[in-house]
Length: 134
Image 1 (cartoon, rainbow, N blue to C red):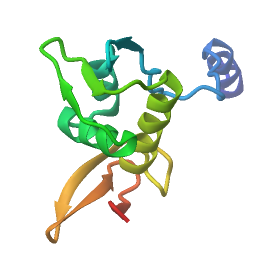
Image 2: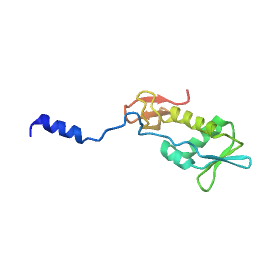
Image 3: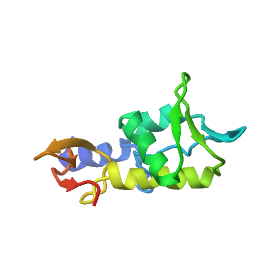
Image 4: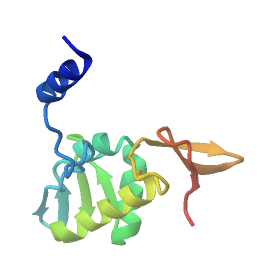
């Protein structure tokens, strides 16, 4: 078999890749009211997807939404007050953009590390280092 024939065969047998999709998709928060508290049912799934410490994500949500919050024994976030799903989703999106997605390459392959006494976002994909909190 000639090289060109083998190449054509390999291309024909390669599955199509949907370029529009992303390998990183943060699920929408599942929120429900419970008295004067808003419960984020899938908080642990969000934290796992973001690959961040749950206390850091919870603190960000508290600051962003201007409320108190805690994690219950089931791993759900309980936010004091009534919040619509869209408002919680916007806060999660802000966290994702500021603390997960690399500002240089746009990939989520980052981690928060300490450098010279300050926390920075280090991208394992492109090597970029971005300061946090600015």
